[in-house]
Structure formats: C-alpha cells, structure tokens
Length: 164
Image (cartoon, rainbow, N blue to C red; front, side, top):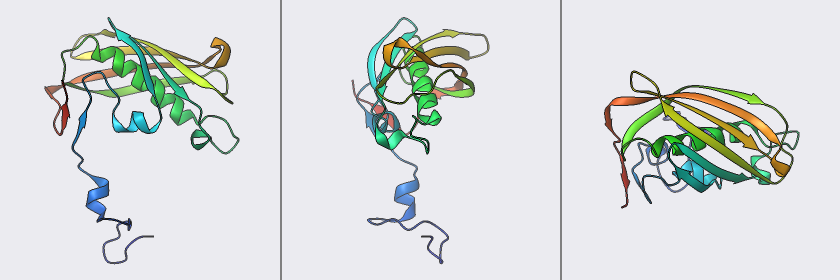
C-alpha cells in the first residue's frame, strides 16, 4: 500500500530508497550470476569462445496464469545466455547492455529444465550480436532469441565489483 505522504510503496524493514536503489553488490566473478539470475535459479553450465550454455528450472513461481512457464522468464534466460557468451569475448568489467531483442516462441514449457545455447559475435561501432535457442525437455526447441548489445563509451561498470 502506498504511503500517502510520499506516494512510495511501504516496505517492512526499511525506507523506499533502500529497496529501489541504487544498489551496490559484489559478484563472484566476471562470468557469474547477478542477483536477478540467481533469483530465477539460472545455472551457468559452460562459457567460452563466444558461446554459453545455461539452464533454468521451471518452478511454480515462474508460471503464468495458464500454468505455463512465463515468457518473460524465457526471455531472461535467453538474454542472460547471450550476455555470458559476450563476457567470454570482451575484457572483464566491460560495460555493455542490450539495445534490442527479439523472441520467437516456438512451443510452451509445461515442466522441467530449460537449456539455453547461445553465441555472440562482434559487429561494428561497439555493437555485438547474440543468438540463443532455448530447449525444453527432450531437446525440443521452445524459443529463438536474437539481440544486439552495445558497449558503453565509459566501458567500466560502476557500482558493481567482481571478486577475483
């Protein structure tokens, strides 16, 4: 319920600013899960040479109203898999971000583990391109994902530190 004095949501245990950021945190390493990726229980299986394989279980909390895996969770897995592929070809702590993405849903996910297989390659003008195919049980393709990323001019990430 909003606080009528500040129009900010009231959260127990602190003020709105402590919940809404900016946040500072440490990651286990350059190629590791960020807090959101850990929240979705994504696992990094393999990363190297512009390629990555990640998995994510279909937990009940990730279901949409019809009981299928939410499309946003699938997109997040595809995007994260491409990010890990990119991290394997750019210098550590390079700041880059998704500037466009497209998802093509092929089949619903009703249960099990989803696997994303991604690759990335550099384009011109500080841009990178990534693609991923996500597979459900029985290696059935469930989503095709494509994206473009751009490396920031000030390429160092601020507010995040990486343990070595």
